Image 1: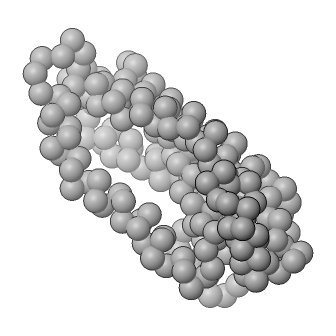
Image 2 (image 1 turned 90 degrees about the horizontal axis):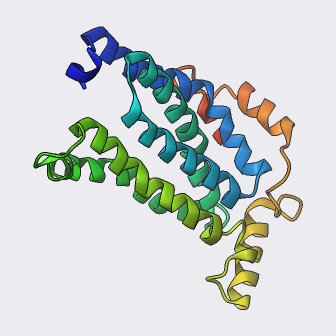
Length: 219
C-alpha cells in the first residue's frame, strides 16, 4: 500500500484518526434501531460496511482511502451499539451480560487468527496487490451476510421464524416484564425525554464515548 499509494507516516496516522472522528460523530445512528425495523437497518449498515470495505481496494490515493475510512466508520457506528439493544428483545437484563460478553469477545478472538488468515490469503503471487485482495476478501462475505440478514434477522420475537407459537408468547411476556406494556413494542418511535435524561445524567462521565448517551436511551 505504501508503494502503490505513496503513503507517509502521518498519512497512515490520519487513516486511523479519521475513522474515530466519524465513529464518534455518527454514534447517534444507534437510535435508528428504534425507528427502522432491525432487519432493514442491520442490512443497510452491514451492506454499506461491506461495500465500502471492498471499495478500498480501488483506492488510487490517500484521499480516496480517507473518504472510504470515513464511511466505514459511519456504517460501523450504526451497527455496533444496536446489537446489545437487539439482544434485549430476547433476554432480560440479568441475562444480557454473558451474551454481550460473547459478542464483544468476538473481535479479540478474530484478531488472534487475523495474521495467519492474512498470510494465507496473500500467499502466492496474485494478480492484484496483497492489500487490495485483503479488502476484497474482507468485504465480500459481509455483503453476502447483508442479504441473509434481510431475510433471517427477526424484527421482534413475535416475528421470529425460529420460535414456536408458545415460545413467541413467552418472549412477548418477558419483554413486557422488562419494559412494561407501553414500551413492549419498541420499534417505530423514540421517547425524546429519555434521550434528554441520558444526556443530563451525571453518571455519564465526559471520558466515555458520546455513544453511551444513546445506548442509555435504548431500553
